[in-house]
Amino acid sequence: MKKFLKVFLFGLMLLSGIIFVSCGKKELTGLHKEFDIIFNGIKEEVTTEFKNNLDALEKEVKDSSRSELETKIQLFGIEVLVEAFNKASYDVVSINDMGDKAELKIKVKAVDFFEALQQIITNTTKDKSNLVDEVEGLLKKIKKGKAPVIEQEIDIEMTKENDTWTIPERQKYVLMKRMMGIQKGTIFDN
Image 1 (tube, rainbow, N blue to C red):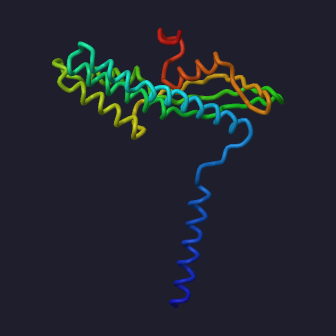
Image 2 (cartoon, helix red, strand yellow):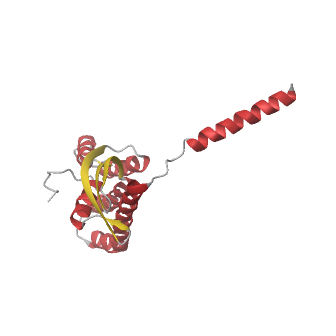
Image 3 (cartoon, rainbow, N blue to C red):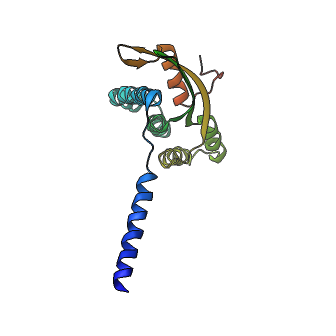
């Protein structure tokens, strides 16, 4: 009986392990993998740029003639923007592979700042005494993946040059805006 129980438990553990491993992240291939490299490269580029200028931004905010409340909100705002940008993701809707050219339709998922700011405004008291807490709460929501999200489709043209897939600078710029949650057609989408 003990031998049967040991064999049964071993088999159960083995089956659980196989199920756990097979439920892992699906490995990307082909153009999806190439676009993923571009997407994550944009994230890294923007994050690096932000971090390289972070000290100067913080110094400018602290040295300004703003009130203590405004200074705290701006400092949290910088952190909110960087964190939100890094949480941006995408799904590939379709791929049209044409050899050295390709067209991808993707759905970018990013923090919906319009919705998030409406929530902050709604929850902020008249004297604004809880405004810093509300902005800090947004940061926590973003980190936990609980912030409002906007999904926007975008068509991407990819070109293969010297065995490397690229996208045009204008599309890279539009993609960065969608990753920042900037909605198409708004005043910020110039």
